[in-house]
Image 1: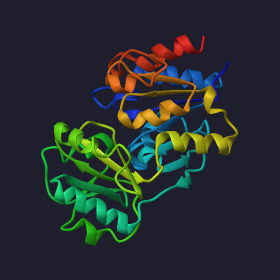
Image 2: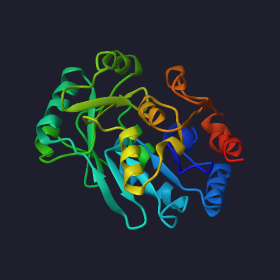
Image 3: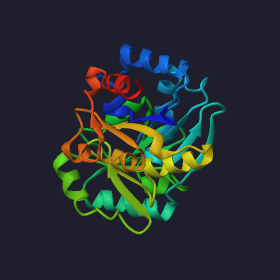
Image 4: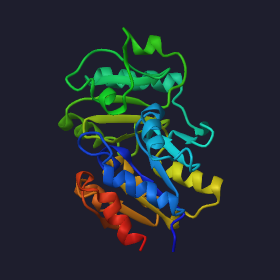
Length: 267
């Protein structure tokens, strides 16, 4: 049966270790769209950090969607309209920043097309390098941010982030959930926000069946997406804890794992 939608994570799934989309993968995804298949992107990245890749795949021409900030926003690429948005309010944002400060995390968020941050860290530039967004340093994030934001993030070494995540299996608090996209990124979103929830919402909007969808991912923030779709494909570079939720495992993101799997699934 032809899938209703093929959904892909970006970092370490669609994109290689060099933060590029390989020519093989790009040409394959363009070809299946010409054959009538629909694709979508779901990422922890900010919207602005996804748009160019989507356009490179001609997703705007093909009237597709991207789900950014781990599902906090969904954008209709045919008219560049935000069709769904769930934001962290000011009081919850301040709680997150207090937590980051108390736990010596490098804190950042997103505002007016910039990555806004306070302090410094060895890993402070990684998000900008991945997404292409410029960085803006401020003295105090709680003072600078006076309205809602789609996502906030604490950055630190993998062992510390892992330790903190073990205490957040039920979320950060009653208003905020937490997840990881990379092992050094602790990401905070509104309660109930996930790639899986965004996919379910999009399915209802477009009258699609999530059980007839294929999703590709590699990280903890892809697990809810895997639970939602009929066919969940983990990249070979995914952790074992993510692979446990997968229907199948394909080659790595550096070995064109997406077309490798789709050639089997779509035949």
